[in-house]
Amino acid sequence: MKNVMILTGAGQIGMAIARRMGYGMKIVIGDKRLENAEAVTDTMNKAGFDAVPAEMDLSSRNSILELINKAQQYGEIAMLVNAAGVSPSQASIETILKVDLYGTAVLLEEVGKVIKPGGVGVTISSQSGHRLPALTSDEERQLACTPTEELLSLEILQPRNIRDTLHAYQLAKRCNVKRVMAEAVKWGKRDARINSISPGIIVTPLAFDEFNGPRGDFYKNMFATCPAGRPGTTDEVANVAELLMSNRGAFITGADFLVDGGATAAYFYGKPM
Image (cartoon, rainbow, N blue to C red; front, side, top):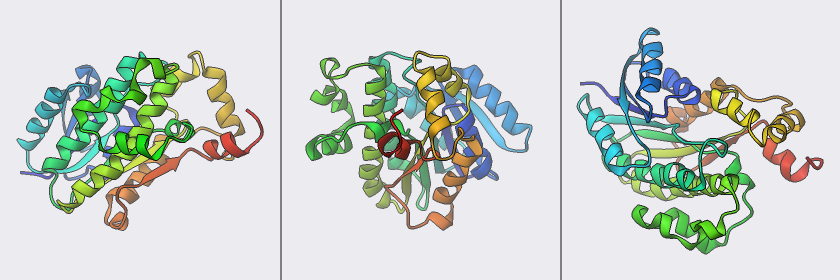
């Protein structure tokens, strides 16, 4: 039996983190499209890792529980890397809330019940959550603490209160960060840690969907005018994940790390975009 890493979302960021942290572990790779999970599994196994694919729908608690059960067949779950989700150009408001907001909350909750003592997790949020205007303390507490099955009933998340898919995405990612804070308290009772990373524009296939979508010019201008002057790479996200998931990050839990080349700083305090 090995220590097990669960990787949800068979994309480039998740794979970069898994390659950095998954050596010596059994890596169970879940994705809604099994062929995506199989492709990343093949790439990693050919690089010397020990991975298996699984079909998983992040919007379904039953599907999440099935993935956890599969993972537990190989040993104790010691690491979670959640990089699953949909972007504003890929999905409807309803789907974004069901997958990115509700699904992430359920995944953190369910893995937190079984994570190995000393275990650790990271979930990929987004700089978008940092661009959402300030919420009230009550709204933030609702996003953090509302029972998962009641989350989508919150007033703030009703369709009449959401302008478009980008607004839904921002709310989902703000919820991710608040959820991580609340879950860190629960994970701590198992001597485990959970943090989030909020990347900016990272060059991945999903980013290309955004570059070529209705907000493409906005995104291209964003990294052109940010302090770093360029988009980021998946390995730069993995650098932060390595800190958070290693013993060097042992005193870090319930935190969010903004990794965006300064794009959020430029958005608020730079020249008008």
